[in-house]
Image (cartoon, rainbow, N blue to C red; front, top):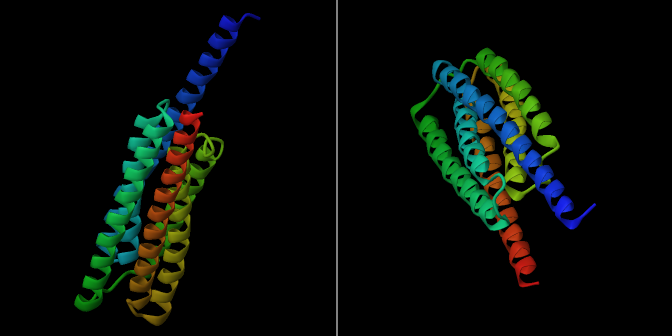
Length: 212
């Protein structure tokens, strides 16, 4: 096989890989938009900080998946920029959620525990689907690794919401919901920091390869 044929074959494989990445990200983007609508609506009705935090987190995820679709097939530097933007977005939204948790602590809230549990379980099920879709792609670029981190964080947050929903019902107190709201803030901020770290490492690797 000639060098030209090898080059054409590698380009075909690259194109196929990019198409698979884009299709996966489009599926995950659609799932996250659905989660935003459901968790946000139920969060407002159930007066739950935890569910509102989950909806906010899913909205950030949707933004990340949208910019990750833009990064598919682009250079390492472009993917690192997308990941950096994702990390900054996540940190900003985490701080906004922190403000909302503090506001509800002082104003007061009466969350509905059962609604929290059912919605969080449904969210977790769709997150499992997202993880399954992303699993085979997570090592194909820092932008996809960021997507994997986002979805893993969502799973942790939803598990916490289920526990806090049960605690709200058992203790008849809004404090467990506010506590899980703070936990979600921590998860979101850590996820944003991890993504920024991955972006810096990817950018350094890209620069070292270019120098060689």
